[in-house]
Length: 293
Image (cartoon, rainbow, N blue to C red; front, side, top):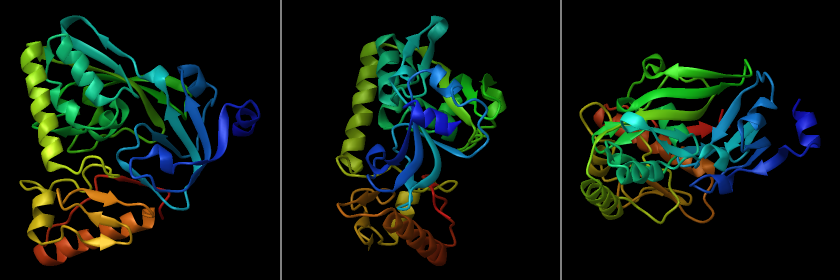
């Protein structure tokens, strides 16, 4: 099937994934499908092999050797944002979360402001239960539409069926998120705009914006913050190759020119083992590692 799609020009081979991620590191995908419509996903038919879906590339690290399978990148056809009745907002999987927050605020719908602080897309947020500033995806999502690659069909999932936990859901790799609907609350556009400005200002003051990073590296332990623990151990500035622990926020790692995915993975392992050895706390990566053994 992929061979036919390559011949038809719908699937590309050996595509460099580094430019598609915020870290700007990593090797090629064996195949890449740029899906602009549901028809593009349907063209795969039932597809049993492992796949990786890339949205904004803000939460993953691709191995230097790349990924030996199919990568799916959802395009602008999956970026729509629709305001419905009863303060329901529907958004395609490729819609940027900050755009969803601003569209909701303009429509006087509250509860979405935290999304302005997450540089990812709806699909990734739904899959990993993204959140910050006291809220998360699980608190708002109603339904999720997925394309089941194994069955070759569209499936509707209810929020209750997703088994949400902290930065996790039970969505399987073969379930490609294509759209989700969310419920908000009554809000005042001016107040919501002020709230979003506060969040944006806080991120600018406390996080290493303008650098190659993938957001939070580790999940927060129960009742604590990974960044605080790393900072208290004096690990800010710790470096492996051309990747270092940010001096602005210890739970962010910054990749400089010449960095490799191996540098990132090695630094993640080094910081995690150091924290465990000195505190007994096990830090679990929040980022997704693609193509690593």
